[in-house]
Length: 396
Ligand code: PMP
Picture 1: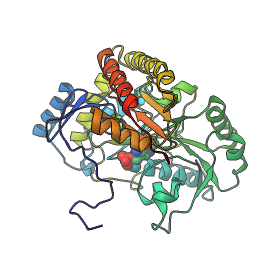
Picture 2 (picture 1 turned 180 degrees about the vertical axis):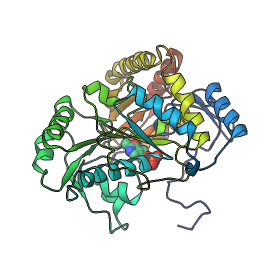
Picture 3 (picture 1 turned 90 degrees about the horizontal axis):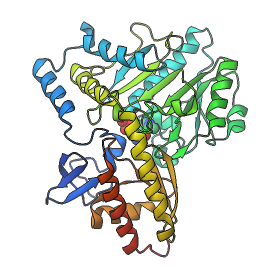
Picture 4 (picture 1 turned 135 degrees about the vertical axis):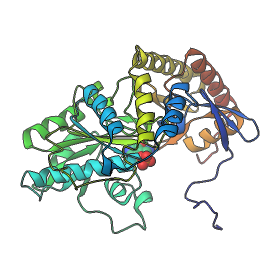
């Protein structure tokens, strides 16, 4: 392979969107795509949402950046709104999901130091999880394809099978800080944690003074129809990483924590030049305005149910290809009987439909949260047509 100006770490694909409007993206050739990928669960408000665009433009003209050295009234305001709406007492803003997870890992380690138990520095994480691409987060992510050649990795992680409570509990020893887990695995193929598993982790953390750290970078921020996915399970975390939907396209993430869990994060322990920058905060405020608006999350639930029902109805007509529907709200997965990457490319190149492949032969369906019935109908009709003409290859 020859080198390209942009480091060639992503596979090339035919679509090069240059403009977005609502639930649609447009390519250089004017080709229209129905965007049920949302930049991998990012564009929660679709493209060009007027409230978000205006908030960013107004803030850009007022003050784009100063420094956390001078404090951050904008950060304090958004943090207060998040604290009011969640389990958390305190927030650290980041620029991405991986940085939010990094902050969560550091917060957990620092907590046990502050408790006088520095040997409790190991988090138990889960197979098929994805936590990001920094050295710390690939160390937490037990997947050779993301780790090979990047060693030495960060020590302090042990891995258990997802949804296997007994196996997770068996790994606990005197070095355990807690658990780091996605309530619903996204990249891993839309696998939802079971009630027994997530509630069991919460219980053992309470009993043994461990921390439950949730990675809600993909499943959080309204995607499941709840503000956060852990609400579906009737549990709260001690620490939580958030990104993607929180900025709805603006690079923003956050680490939320209870007062107790954050007790080690005192002045001078952590920082980020851009974390909590006024422009990012303006985007975060605008997204939250919409998400917290009357009936918005109920709309997500209703659209999710409608989309799921349409997909389930489709399975018998395409049972050579479709197997089952997974997920919650507008975080849905269609499990195929053959390679999902090839089918996702077929939908994109021949039917103007954007979705995302995930592990375990799953097509991830992650539309903007602002879709309406007409978009569900258009998606279903195009997906059905795509499946009708699709020919899986023999060795799929
Ligand atoms: N955690 C989860 C659950 C994710 O899905 C992702 C991104 N797909 C990340 C962390 C990393 O986020 P980012 O790419 O913004 O660093």
